[in-house]
Length: 175
Image (cartoon, rainbow, N blue to C red):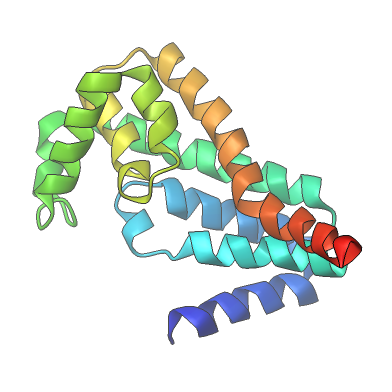
């Protein structure tokens, strides 16, 4: 199944089963933010499609926004916890064992930017999954991490869903 078919299937499932939309979006955002798994889950494209579904079908934006923010928050929180527990041994596990440069780039970025790096990392595909892991490895203060985590998750969720949800309505009204 290619990316387009997977995206279409997920969006159609949410359209047909709106009651499951919250959980599907939360799971997608969780997978997108979780170290290791984010490399396997094409959630960004699917979530953009969900945003367009919201704009086209009248599904309420706010519950899906909350689901995306909650999923992203917990994905980063778990990645941070894994970093705290495994420290440098994390490079022995796939996919980092095959791509150690991901962790090295994240570490350099974290050393330079700290808490701001964790916040900004949410908005960069390659850094999204590695920054929380690196923050845990570097023993970042859990309070500082969670502050960056929760604020970036809320903004990221809006940024991934709102263009489709509101942009489509704006374009229709403008045209």
